[in-house]
Amino acid sequence: MSLRYDRIDNFWFVLRHEIEHVLQKHGQADAIGIVDELDGNRSAVDGPGLPREELIANRAAAEFCIPQHELVELIAQRNPYISERDVLSFAKRVDVHLGLVVGQIHSRTGCYDFLRRYLVKIRQFILPDAITDGWGHVFSM
Image (cartoon, rainbow, N blue to C red; front, side, top):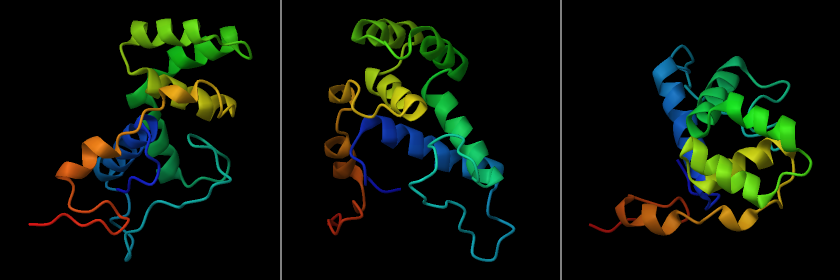
């Protein structure tokens, strides 16, 4: 797992996404075993054309971050005028970090500039215990 995007929402989504691949035993039947397909033109959760395994992992990761039925309800009620106060109270009610809510709203609405300041950086907390960061900084023993 890389820290390509140094944001709390991406870290938790990608970690749970990859865990779902392991839980579902995705890729075990393939000779190469590569499952994830990186395509920036596809939606983060359920874009058209995604392989079944990716849809399963994306949906599990999204649900892990935030109860999706509640997020869908929030967006349906408030979009396109979701206020910061709406997001703050929603995050408190579902008991998740504000950055996870903001990241999921970005993914669902396509408004990637909305409340971006809540997408806190996480690399500083992960690297001290990592073997490598994927960018040439290797853990020394």
